[in-house]
Image 1: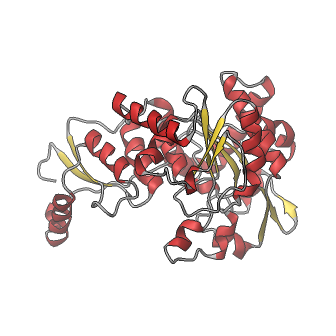
Image 2: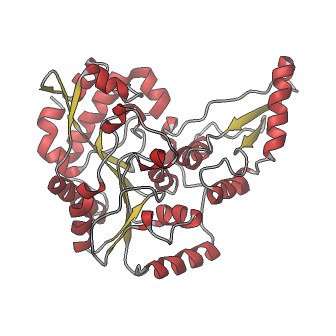
Image 3: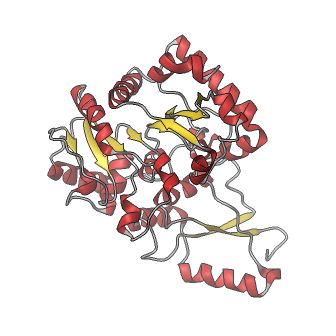
Length: 370
């Protein structure tokens, strides 16, 4: 700190990870206490070549006015050599304490030229820009395998097979949506032929601009908790998160993150939300701990996924106004979360506001909220 009146801080974004690059600056800027005349924030977005998406990093650099990475690096090294001059380095979050995403408009926007280019490329892909499109975001282990890495066995609790979502894609197409499967080009291809379903992830049309543009302009997304859905949230596009297992990494503090839990079994017993807390499962981050605890999970069937995706789409079409029972069940969920998460939850997420999928709540609230 160079002055008792001005705080100079270095904010280092985890730009090597796509979701963190999208949401860490957005959450920080959206927080009520993020701006002050007595603070000077110097942002670090890592070096060119080390960023998960160069186009997204450049968009943030215009908003944040980030100095060159070499300058930030020099300041950090100077602080290590002379601790008296070390600058404050706050931790950034993707979750949104203060319910940041619910209480502000997005800080990233597309200008006219970007919209024109985005629509031009969508048309080249064969999409009709006069019809709504949605994103399908499925996590699998292909990305790390492509880098020569192997995920540990615990990641089987987080990875999905895209074929289980083909019925959901067809169902969404049948009610008027075009479905764009997102990804980095290393995923298992969809084995589906439908003019309204486009496997962008493994197509020749993939590029960093369209990775962001599609996620930022979609009607909504269906996701299994992985990078591109964070871009949707940054642009305030609703996301339905399917079969959540790793609760600690979920976005409980925003109303645009809809969800349903996977069914979690311990010693042959299906666990309610309260029991997930009681058995110390809620805060697990390392998925290998699920294996170590002997946890079994049961995911939604392809048909159930299709039904819940359609129910989510129809809920949004109706203006996100749920039934009296659905609103009641969500209040119960949020009360349990707020009580069980305590102060730690408030600091990580803010007040819990993420709604359950309407159809899941109607069918499963009796056991999940017992």
